[in-house]
Each structure stands twice: as C-alpha cells, then as structure tokens.
Image (cartoon, rainbow, N blue to C red; front, side):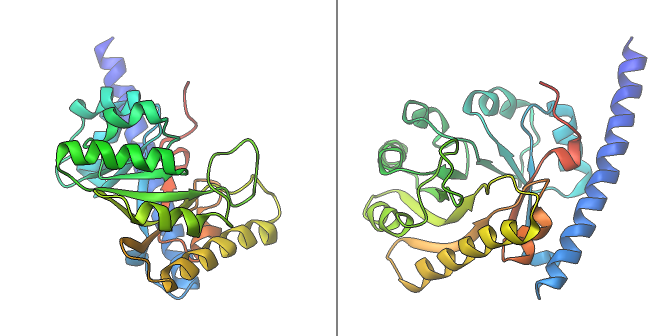
Length: 244
C-alpha cells in the first residue's frame, strides 16, 4: 500500500512540475507582451485543499516563495506541516471579523479586506501583538452580488479610512472579476482595476502604498498580466482540479 502511495505521489509531483513550467512560460510571455519581464510578476501558488506533501514539493523543488490559502482553519491546520522558511503566506479568501484574531500574525498579508469593520479588527489584533499587518483592499470589480469586495467607487474612501488606523498597512488592491468568455470584457475589468490602482496611488494617501495589484487566477492570469497585474494567484493550473 505504501509503495502504491509513493508511486501516486511521484506521478502527481511530475504533473505538478510540468504544469508549473507551463504556467511560468505563459507568465513570461504575457509579461513581455505587457512591456515587462517575468521578474515583474509574482506568482502565488494557491494551496486550497492541497495536501502539505505537494505544497512542500513546489516549495522545496521549484523556487516557490509565495503561497495563498482561502480559509483560516485550513491554513492553521496545514501551517505546522509546511516548509515555510523564506516563504510568504497570504490569506486570500473572505475574512469574517470573528476569525481575525486567529489569523493575524499567521500570515504576512491579508488580501481580502473589503470593509472598515474588518480593518479595525485587524488593527486591534495587530496592536495587541505589537506587529503591523499588510493588507490589500478587495474590490468587486464586476459589481456582482454573489461576490465580496468593496465597490470601485468606494475603494478610495475605504483607503482613506484605513489609513488612519494603527498597525495596519494597505499595500495594494485585489480582485476576482466575473466569469467571462469574452476576452474584451474580461480585459476591461482588469483595465478598470489598473486605473483604480493608479488613481489611488496618485492621491498620495499616508499609510497607503500601491505596490501590489493582485488579479488573475488559473483561467485568466494571462489577460490580467496584459492589463497590469503584478501578482497572480494560481492553483488548479498547477495542482490540477481540486478534490473536495
């Protein structure tokens, strides 16, 4: 049984290596088309539902330095088993206020801050620990009722409000666009995010730093890079379809 398990893991790791190679090639191609280089685009490997052995494989063998988890409980259960020296961990899923205490101090960045109440709690818990927590503002670029995120119109005001809080630092924006088969429409969503990113940067708000534009996942990272993303969040294109 153990032999079969080892063979399965070896086969999966080989597939992961090949997938990761393809993803990096496409990132490089899109970066060049956008007037940049692959070094300008940070690859986040999304590890939702993935076993620690496969996460450690990409960390140990493929130079992965950034992983993202969606759920606080899954993150906390996996973290002790992961090889995280020199690896950043971000929370990218929706964060409830009552989960903030558990995650502050466990990740370097929370990418899914979409309301002042959550930001205040992050600030409060960070103060208690004597740390500063980096966050991104999540924007619901398509205005979908089914998705979390502040509106594109309210994002600047939210930045102003968060800028006054201690022990929390806004480092950029994140979005998940609507599922769309029309490349032109999809790229317009990403373009709108880039414009918002630049607009907030030009406002020169104290404690607000537009360094990270996190947009693009397995199905649309190529288009996101073409429109200015500098961090892409990729899971299934590396690990294969998720097993729930």
